[in-house]
Length: 212
Ligand code: AMP
Image (tube, rainbow, N blue to C red; front, top):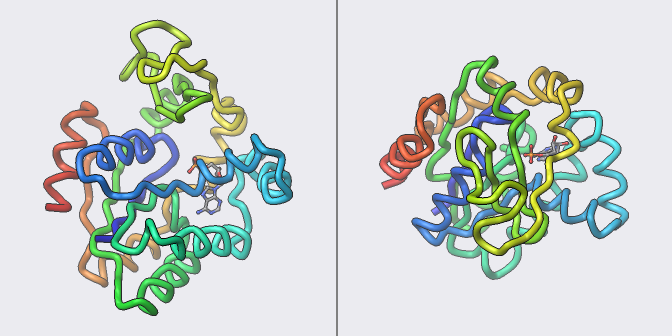
């Protein structure tokens, strides 16, 4: 099964993807995580991506699509995957459709998590990530047992540089899923719309229901 998670920054895609991956054992592929890993390791790709990420802009399609196609060509993605943060536009969606189509597969579900803007802004401000294992927390909605420390591995929690208020404004302006992208999946008959302004557990339950 191949699933895409759609939604604006702060809708909860990353947190829900981690929960769905634990519940379904589907491979979780996050292009944002892949870029952050490259930034951390100071690769050429990371240096290039970071010039866009720090401004809250999308990394160019050519670069992002190449990275994603390489990732899904690996054997662990043969049977299925859940994409979090990809595609961000119809060009990326078409590239993914082509790649999957070439091996007799397709996107089975597109889960669109929608949340009002004012809620997104407050969520992005309180977000913390484990430097070691990538687990996501929120100081209000999903706090760790001990501030600054990961419940799962004891790693140090940090705040994303692009969660600063001045960058958040750009991300919200430039990175909401475009209407054509939602339409792309609606036309394919695989779109499910999920109200993301509810408790984490309620949203997870709706998402699991939608992929059952
Ligand atoms: P995210 O963790 O999904 O919020 O992604 C963090 C940053 O990585 C974004 O602000 C973009 O700069 C970049 N990024 C992640 N996924 C994509 C994508 N599919 N296309 C272009 N840029 C992306």
